[in-house]
Length: 353
Ligand SMILES: *Cc1c(COP(=O)(O)O)cnc(C)c1O
Ligand code: SF4
Image (cartoon, rainbow, N blue to C red; front, side, top):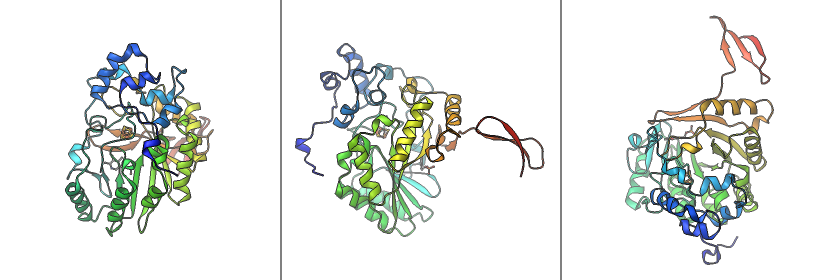
């Protein structure tokens, strides 16, 4: 597909541009300017096309258009909600779990999600790793043989040019103890033109496998161009997983979650994690309770294909790691392998084992 940046409409980066496109109300501009001064704004032309301005509760708009409620910062909200900092041995690396590290080559994204858990770190002004810093990060990976997997994240690593993406993957490929590179990205749905033939070639595993994890929270994010971009990746033999954030007013009902996970599976993406909202600053209007999340997951179980069931996950604040929050279906009733198990209809049965 052609890639001619000059002929493409531009990403909207100022609240005034959003108002000119009828996406935000002119009367709210002063408050939104204050939001934008604190948290970066970017809305791609693809996302503009997906928003229905006549729908006041549009689930795409809510994720990307700044909102005055972001100015309400609560005491429990943190600048580093998942505690990356203490696990950063060299710039650009987060090593919290033994066999895998995050590698963050860039801090920019094609869009800025209003609920972003790294919103204090991402933005157009944040620096990417320079050549020496990237060398040091890759040397750290090469020097730690227990690392089996590198997760490229950021920012959004697919904002890199295919040439730079290809260089990083080739360097990882040359490290003998690595088996896998995983790329966390929103690009296939928010800026699908970036997934061109060159990018697909750059991503394709050589010795090590490449997996792409798509961050998507609502079936409405899947436009025709986005679906075609996903098909280019999967057709090239790149397996895809889905990662979503549970958010009030975006996807916190059974019908939306069902349709979102079905849309992923129909596009050959296996839903992997549904994250409970992190304590990022100015995001309380998006947060659900854990009880709501568990009830939603429980109502999917049984009625909806097993392929459409992600694991409901909490990233424990302070960097203590990710754990499943899913309801247990099993209760011990004696000391000796006696259990009570609940079926998807809510009926209990004795079980020994
Ligand atoms: C989320 C995360 C991972 C990936 O965890 P998985 O459970 O393998 O998906 C790895 N490292 C860090 C620091 C993370 O935050
Ligand atoms: S794409 Fe990811 S890193 Fe970028 S703003 Fe959205 S959630 Fe944050």
